[in-house]
Image 1 (cartoon, one colour):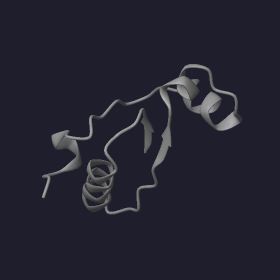
Image 2: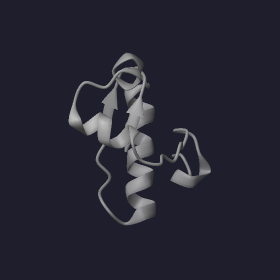
Image 3: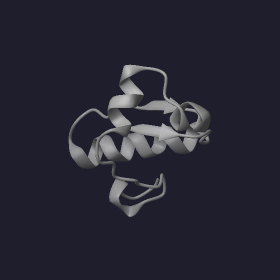
Image 4: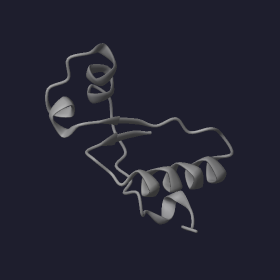
Length: 67
């Protein structure tokens, strides 16, 4: 999971936990600043930006029920 911005860490890790449960697989999270996303300097962010993305808000029902 790539997160752009400065999310509340508790909300973020709750969402990661829900996604892990829902998918049945470990979900790794990578947080980057908006500036780093806007002008990526590394291969990882450049590769991610070059491919289709799915935007899922941290409070999305797609991640399952919040506890």
